[in-house]
Amino acid sequence: MFEDMIPLLTKALGETVYMVAVSMIIATIIGVPVGVLLHVTTKGQILESPILNKVLSSVINAVRSIPFIILLVAIIPFTRLVVGSSIGTTAAMVPLVIASIPFIGRQVETSLREVPEGIVEAAQSMGATPMQIISRVLLPEAMPNIVAQLTTVVIALVGESAMAGAVGGGGLGDLAIRYGYQRFRPEIMLATVVILIIMVQLVQFAGNKLAAKLNKK
Image (cartoon, rainbow, N blue to C red; front, side, top):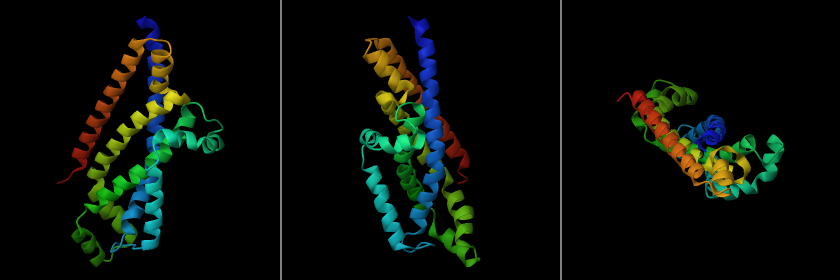
């Protein structure tokens, strides 16, 4: 019984790690600049732009308000346009990325707000440009908090990847539904739950360690 489980679990785990890792990398590349833009365009900040800030904030709030399972189904035509299919591990990454970008943006914005204004004002008094302030002051100062927040996003992605798997996205969620539930094999369902718990614990541990290492205070 256990011999046939190992290849299934190994394959499903690999698909889940692939989904989460690639989705997180893409979402971070886009989401961090979005979060920075949200912060620096706020009233009183270095690139103040109320209209841009309001529009960007509204879009982010709109996407974040959509439950993931609804988003997953709603953007099927867009997913097909991007990857050529709405089924499979690669296809599942499209909604995962779209759902994660606003989440990361808000988390980064929150982290940047915690940077003391005095540090920014000191950099401005020395003639630093907005880009220099962002790259050499805001991001380095907020990095420990950003890493901690991104850890939360990764954990959310693990759960969402399982949900995506339940509707044909592959990974542990797909395995749990197709083999654990539909074929009445509770041991497979239990194994996928245990693996997901271990994944979350490892991600949280690694995130906490990295955030602590980056914290200079």
